[in-house]
Image (tube, rainbow, N blue to C red; front, side, top):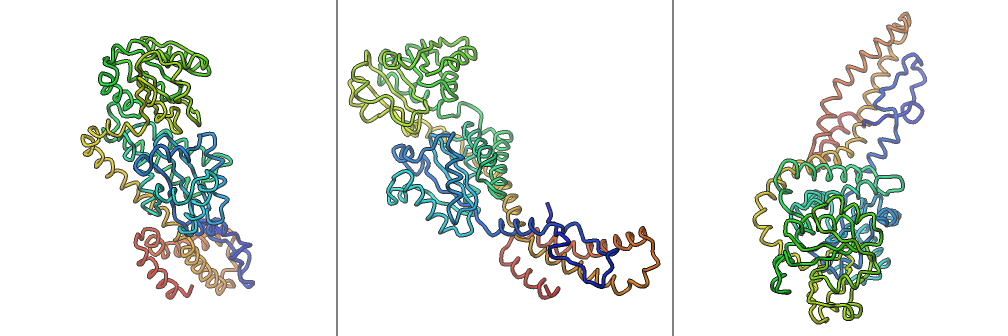
Length: 467
């Protein structure tokens, strides 16, 4: 929306100009909006984070934030001196903070110090694992994340819904996203939807859950001397990951699926959704006996610390078993679990080898998706840079309107016999002429995509129009 300036703020009419002619261009009606947009333009988007590419699960779980706390952490970050806006996203494969700052170096230092102090992680350890991007690189990263191109499993759909939640949480009441992050997150979510609609990158089983099931399919004979259709499976948790696990286990024909969850309503929902699956409900107090008699256990709860570890597993195991943890923070202490006889434990990082073959096959689709994302990046970049044109456009409009009013004041006596309607016609005519003359320079400013050219043009306009 174009800026407006109030009559009382900065475009007071010269005392000799009659009030009847004091009709100010509505484009100059609110000075505050122009100042805010100019301030927003003098900033850069920055992303700091960890992902499956830069840090092990042991490091990622130290910074993991439950979805219920995304907004709280975002507000705390936005309260830092150099940070103007902030948004947080935390998943099993990534932890990322998007923020807006006028000083990239100070902003990064303050955010890094915040993470180190809040999570009691030494700065050296953080620096070894964190990635940091700013400007177009940060926006490009966000676009690739939403498009599923930065995921462990290329094209997986869950990250898009997680990015959408990041947008909803950070832009809702109490959120810390402002003008720039709101626009950026909205852009990346829309871009993610477009990638999935216009390319084939999302076709097929592409999720962490599908990769976990594929891992079991590849390893079950080696680890258990059993085929998939001989397996009794246990799933810890009954959320979205569990639903996807059931969805991918069904075609493999496993013998049974026991779902362990605190509340039974979600298990009943799974039973209703998959009536052909042999889903058996179990409560938390039945967890260890159920794990002990299952061939495979998948862990995907919201627990912030391991719920299966060496000591409690050692006393309950009745047969050889595979433990597959797809949660961050980890639900299973895989190092300790692997010390128990008959147990083979895997964490989410073990999925990398499973999906490597699929990645090469999907590279052509990645290139198609990136072509679409480049369009979205350019559109956001143009919008962000256009914020910087507001001060100059405001000056041009103000200067032109001042000249228009001064010229009208010179012929005021000759216009004294005009009716109110005729005066309005004169106003519209003169304002129309000014608008036509200003249209070219202002359009040129809005569409410039080279910083050096923009600065040179601004200097020329200031000189020509004596701004």
